[in-house]
Structure formats: structure tokens, C-alpha cells
Image 1 (cartoon, helix red, strand yellow):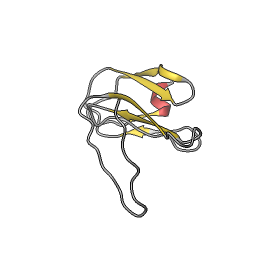
Image 2 (image 1 turned 180 degrees about the vertical axis):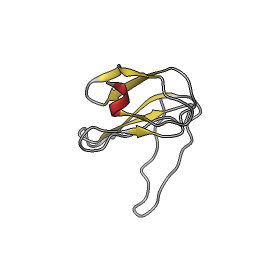
Image 3 (image 1 turned 120 degrees about the vertical axis):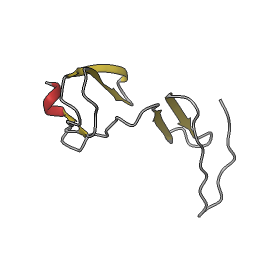
Image 4 (image 1 turned 30 degrees about the horizontal axis):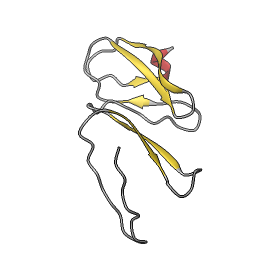
Length: 96
């Protein structure tokens, strides 16, 4: 765990995470201000649209277990499995 000093107004701060996993960010002043950052060691992820659909493009051929994670629900929940051909997108419809 580390603590960062507040960033002056109009400035930004960047940080590169070295390990995959969940990073929780909290504000020491405002308890309602928090964030969850999911760090991956691969490029195959998606943020769903408002209607819950998603697509992950460029996935190599093979068998994959697709998981979902939600800030309020917690841990990864199996969402289905895809056995698409090379380069086929994994989408919400292929995981049913």
C-alpha cells in the first residue's frame, strides 16, 4: 500500500503497475470517493456497454474461460466459454 500526495489542480499524475490484479484506491478525506483498477497481464478485456453487451476482438484460436468482475459484487464470476476460430471476437452472445 502506498500513499500519494494530492495532485495540484490542473495537473495529472501517472503510475505504471508492475503486477496484474485488483488495485483499490481510496480518498483519505472523502470516504465516498474510491476507485477500483483491474490490472491485466494481457490485452484481452472489455468494458461492457450500458446494455451489458461487450466484444473482445483479435482473440487467437483456442478454448477460453471468460470471467466477469464487478466492483460491488467482487470476485471473478464465470461468464461462459468461447471456442471461436482465429481472430474471432469473443462477445456477450458467444458466452451464452
